[in-house]
Amino acid sequence: MGSLGQFFTDLGYEVDAKTLEDLIVGLFQWIITFDPKTINVEYLSQLLTTFAPIWNPVWAAISNFLSEYFGF
Image 1: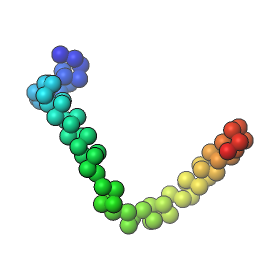
Image 2 (image 1 turned 180 degrees about the horizontal axis):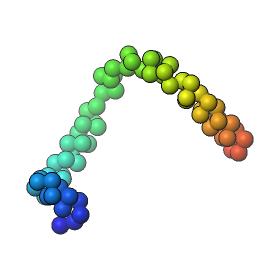
Image 3 (image 1 turned 45 degrees about the horizontal axis):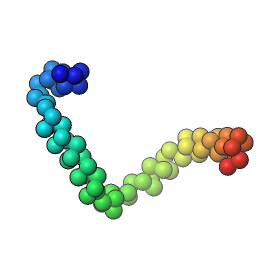
């Protein structure tokens, strides 16, 4: 058993190929059926306002770097 399998065994979980397959299939089914319109973004405006003093200078430095070295 690989180290990942041993990790789950140490936690008390029985992990086999079927379990991993079910996990991967479930993840892909969730991604396929995910609807971005269901995300609540009402808090986004306040979040952006809160972090603007931090983000704006960082983004200005990134933009300056890209324009200076890559012509963007």
